[in-house]
Structure formats: structure tokens, C-alpha cells
Image: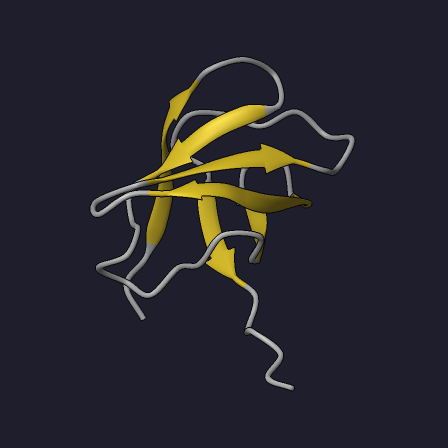
Amino acid sequence: MKQLNIIRLLNEDIFFIGAGHDIGIVKNQFIEVLNPRRSYKNLAQVTEVFDQYAMCEKLGEKKIFFGDTVRLRPLKHK
């Protein structure tokens, strides 16, 4: 899978990642934000999906940074 990163921070909780419909991301999908320099991760959720990027909201307590790596959580099929 393509490595995804945070490409823009709007505030402390909302950010954009550099992937969207073209990668198969869907609204309300959960993602993990990984910070290898500080060795922690945050949980976040996709709030809006566009063709080339997606807007997400952080659910974890740790701070997020521009360039942090993002890992998609698999979708659960019913």
C-alpha cells in the first residue's frame, strides 16, 4: 500500500491526508496517525473524502504534526 502522510494541518484536531477516492478511502473510516520520532500513535477518523485527499479528525490525545505517517485501518464488512 502507498505510504500516506499528513499534508496540511487546519488546527490541533483537523488535518488533511494526501489520498482520497483514488486510494479507496471512505467517510467515517478509522486511521492511525504514527509519529516515528516520538514513537506514539493517534486514532483519527475520516470526515470528508475528495478525489486526491481526505479531511480527518483526530480522536487521540497526542499532538499531530505535518508529515506524520498515516495507516488505514481495514474496513469491516457486514
